[in-house]
Length: 321
Image 1 (cartoon, rainbow, N blue to C red):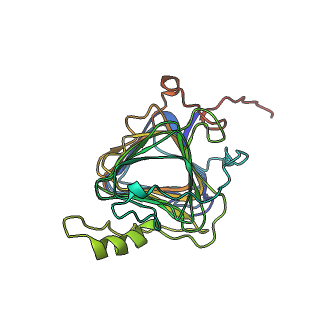
Image 2 (image 1 turned 90 degrees about the horizontal axis):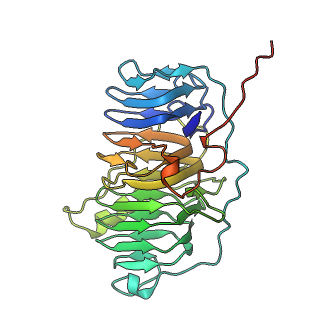
C-alpha cells in the first residue's frame, strides 16, 4: 500500500477527526488511524475523505460523513514508521539580521521586512508578519523554545528546506492571510522531511494563544487575531500544536513528521494541492471548517525522496494456518 497519513495516538477519540465541511483527498494512498478508541476516527456532518483505503484500529463515528471507501475498523495498529529516523540537534542560537526588523530589534525574532534568511537555530522561534516576504535558503531551520508564526499577509517560501521544532514552546501557526510554499530537502539528515519535531514534550504552549494577545494589543480590527484553536475530542499525552489556517498553503512538499504533535487545519481553501506528494505522520490530525487537504502520491514527479516506511510500502502476505 501507499501510506500517506498515519495518526499515532493509540487511544484518543478523534485522533483522526474531520468536522463540518472538511475534506481529505488522498487518491492512490491510504489513511490510517492507530487509535483503538471506539471513536478513534471521526467524520462530522458533510465531512469527506477519499483514499485508496481508510482504516481505523478502533472504531469509526460518522453516520452523516462521506468517506470513500467506508472506513475499515479493528485494523491492526502500525508502529511509528519513522521512529528510528535520526533528527537534527539544535545548535547555538542564531539571531535574525537587523535588517529583518523595521526597528532593528532582533530580540524577539520579529521579521516585518522582506528578507532572505539563513538556516540555523532560531531560539524563541520566528514571527513573520506585516506583509514581510521571507525566503529561506537551503538548509535546516530549528525553532527552539518558540513557534514559527506567519501572519498579517506575511509569506514564507523555500525549497530544499527542513523545519525542526524543539522545546515546550515550539509549534506552528500559518494564519489566514499568509502565503506558504515549501519543499523538503533532497539530501542530508532531513531528506524528505519537510517538518519534524523533538520526540519529547512536557508542557506545550499553543502558538495561537500568544499570538491572540500580541495581535490584539498591537493591530487594528482590519487585521484581526486568529480565533482560538479548536479543542481536540481528547488527548492522552501532551501535544505540540501545529495549526494551518492559511488559504494559500498550496505547496507543502514532503513528509510532515509530528510524533508528539497535533496538526490542526482549519483553512477555507485547498492545502498542499500543488505538491507532488505530501505524507503526514502525527499523533493527531484534526480538520475543521472547510479545508481540503490533498495528500498527493506523485512520488516520481519530484526529486524530494520519500522517507523509508511511508509512501510506497512493499510487503509480503503469508497464509500460515
